[in-house]
Length: 96
Image 1 (cartoon, rainbow, N blue to C red):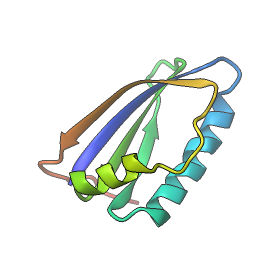
Image 2 (image 1 turned 45 degrees about the vertical axis):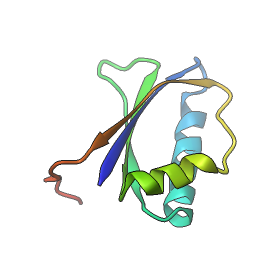
Image 3 (image 1 turned 60 degrees about the vertical axis):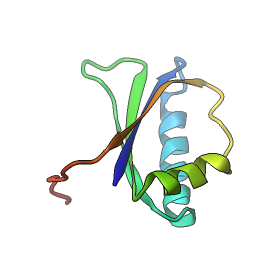
């Protein structure tokens, strides 16, 4: 398993739109791309114009397949600042 950490900076006034874009896009990716296991969206506290998503993929090869053809339109009022791919060593999160 791998995790991918994405950081975006959202332009003022477009935060709610970004949340919808991210939510719909994550559902589409999870149902369309082999190995996509979903993502969690977070924001720093105190609140800022930055958001962080942590996506989970079964393998680097699955992620590469997505990156070759992401099939989505970019969100015009957000700038992706960083992308970091990490190997998942252990997963103890309780879901639900």
